[in-house]
Image (cartoon, rainbow, N blue to C red; front, side, top):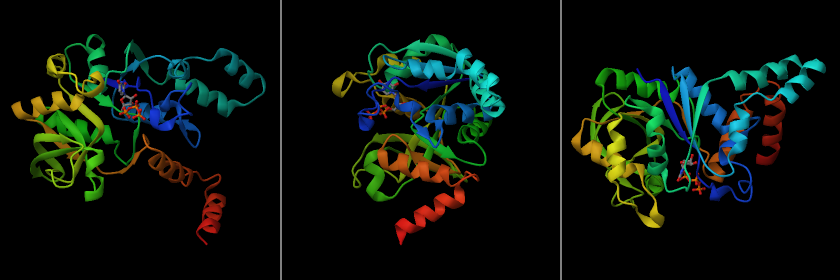
Length: 286
Ligand code: UTP
């Protein structure tokens, strides 16, 4: 049983400066819901019971978001705004959260390693809130279904065009059944010529606790960063290690264009202003 999900949220979010100077990137909202809430909801819908947030300096807004806000609740209650009150309370009761700190943002691998004690000796998920997936079956759930069958680590894959491979970690492996790869190796941000495939790693992972021992041994790279990919490569070499080409629409909200596309996508799903927004978009196209 995978009960815990680690949410590394200690990065500096430099691609969104100045918006992220005093506000966590993960609190940027698509329409009216912060990125982190989309991914926590995905975890819940996938059966996760405990969230481990790896936070850092300037991330207090994240803690407040998942906590009670009694002054706000009092105000909403006394002004008869029942719907909003329910929304606000729902977030604070959503999931049990354990907070650990990453003193310095020394890479994704380092952030995951900080969660070691909170996770303990059990399989766990890692979710990057930059990667938003709108899917009928939650993306993490699709991974967990494969994990349950094979009892080995599983990561999320997306087929990307040649011109995009250099932005991602790309896997080398064999397709063993519909949408499932047995992964042998992976390359971080390869050029088109070096890329072993067009299948890119997206921010959803189901990992076994041996990843922590691997992370302890990873040598820091550029800027002292410890990369999760290095530990995953080790695991893939020892195998078995799987990848799932998930079904659903993915948005890379860690970059501005991806974030804008996601905003339009989720705005068009809102019945209350869908038509008006569509009319507006049409005027732009014309
Ligand atoms: P990114 O690579 O997107 O880095 O991290 P970033 O700092 O958030 O953003 P940019 O590149 O400066 O714009 C992917 C995820 O890993 C977390 C981030 O918070 C993000 O959710 N992360 C990254 C950490 O928790 N710690 C780190 O040291 C690095």
